[in-house]
Image 1: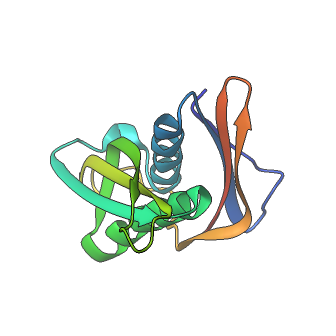
Image 2: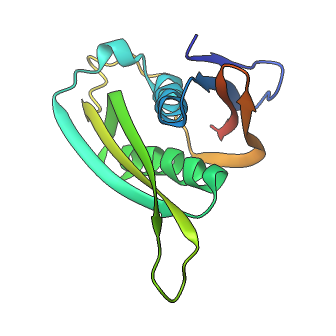
Length: 149
């Protein structure tokens, strides 16, 4: 199972848990859960590709920023995605600031919203920090996310 919706967590919002054997897979599945909240992704053709990069020093903040960017792309460009690939890596900021930072490279495939073809669901307004967390499990990782709709 890639993700599951948590109906008992939030009544006015949408909550989900996503899973991944790796952090890359966890982030991809979280992204798909956000998209699936907005649209039946099986109705979204991978016609256009988009990519972006995000950096942050904290893993949970990086996931939050990534999911928020998906909502932003929907709001600004009217884009929905049915395929998501994520690559996480670390880098050193600079010689004067040697702390490690995380980089997320995202590649997304989808298309512009077309209400005549897409089975639209909820309009996600934002990712929230309520109950937001990433946990290491025996078989990989789990994230809990609540979306404001």
